Image 1 (cartoon, rainbow, N blue to C red):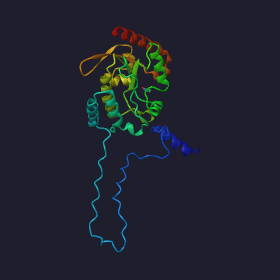
Image 2: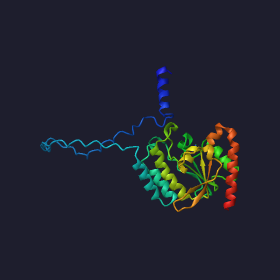
Image 3: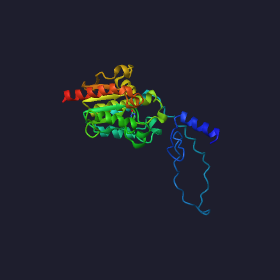
Image 4: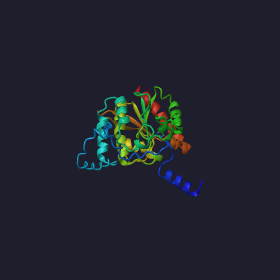
Length: 273
Ligand code: URA
């Protein structure tokens, strides 16, 4: 590989292009192709009418670009989320939602996995490459660790817990989502929690904790301490901030603290009956 090609590939990776999705590039910002004009039946010279001298139609005005960063988009997402009365309506609305730029580069919408209505709902951060490919949250290595942690207190996706993320689309190259992208997804996530109504909410990782609890406190200070997430009707859901499994894979010494969090969740579940 020449130095030039290697430098170009490095540049792509730095810009967030870290995998090939298709054979041909798609310019999603390009205006749609003009609609085909109605088909014209062939005319012979004998039947051809004289060409009328008419001015060509004025060029159509350029389409206003859709602003990708706007509080209105967050409001729209919130209104749409509020209009959903069931989890399946919410899922359909999110899958059909075109307002979030993250969707343009993602392969799949990653909504949720596990059992809707399960006693525990886990909210993580964002789909990674594996989740994007398979369209399910927490299916990569950190998801496998999450499954083992939950299994240690007898909870499995099948009946024991329901799992999602604050983002429904993988940010390209795992970049930080913009405020608007995060705000739109969070509007859906809040409705998601509302409709799932778990007995216990588990927030995995600092990004999820900060977003859902709307706090600037770091995960190290908050983890392991029960707090409450208040639903629209005033119901307070006991909420446990805990380390993200990806962090635990990098920092195995912290698994001891996460084990304490699991025991606390188990105890609370038993108390709640
Ligand atoms: N990390 C997350 O926060 N969520 C996933 O779905 C996968 C990895």
